[in-house]
Length: 318
Ligand SMILES: O=C(O)CCC(=O)C(=O)O
Image 1 (spheres, helix red, strand yellow):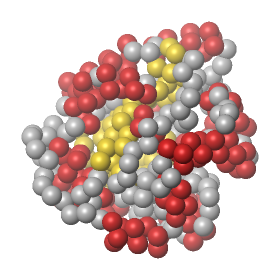
Image 2 (image 1 turned 45 degrees about the vertical axis):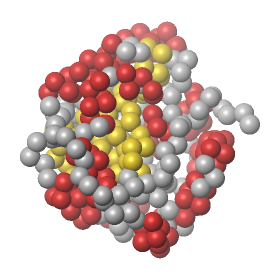
Image 3 (image 1 turned 180 degrees about the vertical axis):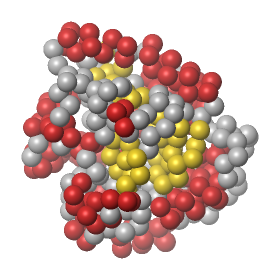
């Protein structure tokens, strides 16, 4: 099966069209089913509330014991985080130690990243403008894929006992790490309506597993001009039938805000190091940075075998 190159995916997705966006993902879905046939029932059924509940009651495992060792998030109680997740789908009160977020940011400035999910477009983030000129195209993102794990500070966050404890208490005893990635989002001259229509810049929910949890950390100061992440509180446990019986995970802002209310949208701005954890079945999106690049880290947990492809956020393994 021929997988379209990522730059094609990027431009097709940008040109819009729901059917086109679904069609370009078909090779990706086939890759997922080949790697793990259990992915298909999850992908079809985990979007509906009754099947999610059924899966929860049928498979949830007890939490055996708390994670060992001291956490870098002093003063944060697992129970409080889990309670906020159950109620709102979001807890926004984490802070990385300065040495950790500085080390990750330094690593991300001095290590080559891959533009627009394409391993052929490698560049250093401080040379973003020169790289756009060199490649003759806009570079909206810079992903590090497996290189993320070359940074000790990234590994220290991924292995922090608080993250595992929260994940096990929220998802069940079988919770395990299924993603670890760092990536840049860049402002570009072409970031416009077309970019906003891309799935990740649009309210969507994640369907990589039956139950998931994602920890995100801003690694630079993030304000309204830096493309902050937005989460719709409460949307992880209440879902319109229309949004359950659809193959699409992305939905227009008017529909989402019309149902949950404008006041449910939490915009996650904060200083470098600021972190939050969300249930990504709730509607969320990254917004387009307008002024400054955003550097973000994600550690995701799930309850099933992790996908090799998604572990570092790669759209399709090639
Ligand atoms: O870039 C962001 O803030 C959003 C990331 C996202 O949508 C996801 O990881 O599912």
